[in-house]
Image (cartoon, rainbow, N blue to C red; front, side):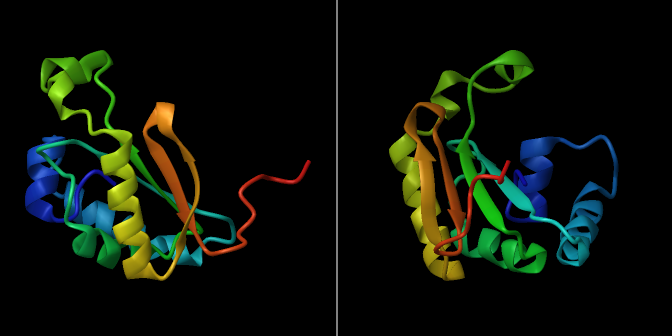
Length: 132
């Protein structure tokens, strides 16, 4: 999920379909009905979609995922045509976002990987590894 609201979605994703935001909302609404663990990833881009923790929290509440994974944008591939290296948030900024989001949702930071600029949020004691 690359945006906390429709306007940021349009700016960040530049969708080619007219109902992309509405389709995303339908998908979020369907996630709780799945009989499996689910993950919502927030790919965070400095100066574009980073922040808005309260709005992201509202969307996460709709989806009710097992895990939430805030991850910093990485300046690679085709993204280099639209963005710059300055759009890469630091791990500290991703962690700050994750902790604020976790606080709003009543969950915790379970794991982090600083070199990948990613944190994993979920319920305390939630198993993060699949059993063999």
